Amino acid sequence: MNIVMRYFFRFLRLVLTPVILVMEKFTTPKAMARSAEDQAAIDSACKDLALYQFQACPFCVKVRKEIARLGLNIEYRDARNNPYHRAELEEGGGRIKVPCLRVTQSDGKQEWLYESSAINQWLRERFDPSVEDAANA
Image (cartoon, rainbow, N blue to C red):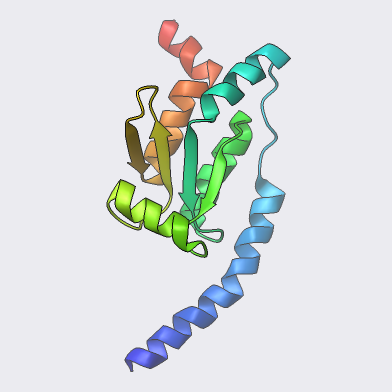
């Protein structure tokens, strides 16, 4: 029975993966407009960020959509198919769970953020000007 369940879920993943990726393609929002100087500052801040993810994970899709909406240039690291990135995630973050955003501080210290909602909230607080405006009001 255990092998039947394993193959059932593999088949399900095989069928759903293209559906998830096509839906992501059609529903990803356009990036917010910024001046060239503002975008350059955002790109500079994003150089210390890396998203460990699986391509067809729905929670990873949620984070990638928020990254696209905010117009962020964050490196994606495939923790499923790349053994180096998988090992890096396990060693640094302590577990192989995606999505995971690695934030490298200016002093070299690394922070590992798990959970799509927590990652999106962190990104909004840092890069969404409407959140900053609401906090200042």
